[in-house]
Length: 79
Image (cartoon, rainbow, N blue to C red; front, side, top):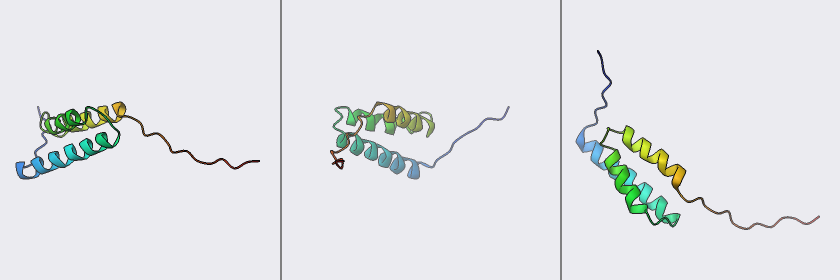
């Protein structure tokens, strides 16, 4: 039986996982989330268990849970 295997060299995987974790941390901090550090750690770990698919799953869950940005006030033209 043939299986699918994702192989990313360590010298590429660690910086890529760190960049993803930093991006999610900054986004969560911008949205005033208290759990920004946990999302970053989860993304970094999810990048390696299972390879890459775990990070995608953590990111998708993060998108559902993150705080929505509130729109700024804008003027409505009078009639």
